[in-house]
Image (cartoon, rainbow, N blue to C red; front, side, top):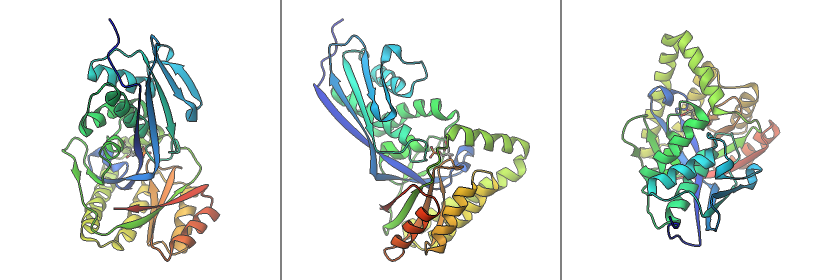
Length: 315
Ligand code: PMV
């Protein structure tokens, strides 16, 4: 069979993301809020080639290999195969080059962004327009390899590139940010695989369901209130909601000494609130800042150990 006609070269991108409220509880059916972060992104370039396989170049991840040699659970190989299957083309005769500025395993959605960018680029290069739901569904299959029991929030917010109010298994709700606000995102420098934190929470939940369900309820309620505050432009009330959410995340065992230090430093320097974002244990701490406090907060978070801090405008 001759290979399907394709564009010589196609590039697509996908942003990073942060979870503002509701991580972990979202795995147990509670709502969570996530937003795209466009300062960082993954990029996939698909080029036509004569190869009888697909050459994958993920130099940022220090990996170069072919689809044929990839292990069955390799995330990039999986999204290549799934996308080709979806659009009905043979996985051969092209190369995929991945570049990403999203730090890996820090709660910024690097895996989902690589999947989304790759699926978009492959589909586009063969002249197919997959919609956001279809792209998100493909990326979700790969999330399952990384995470075991993912809620689906990462692939959703990254494929839709809009603030999302997400409840697992329910139709997606995007929402409006009435008044833009600034969030400082501090990388603790500690990689924290989501699968491990999610697995630990599950074991604790199994050991004490009543207490964990109550905490998840409280976290879900915070996400509901946060959405209302964001839609009404009542931005400052998000600070206290962040601190309440952080306390509950600590109670379910996903904070750490390093995270607490960065949270305390941010609040001490004038942030309205701060919390871990993502799986916890390491990864990122986010802090609600304004134009006056941002400089001080960024400096304080770095002094407390953050290896880098970016400030992003939400909305
Ligand atoms: O991928 P991360 O590190 O942003 O964390 C995902 C958020 C969790 O709620 C902990 C897991 C999930 O699948 O929603």
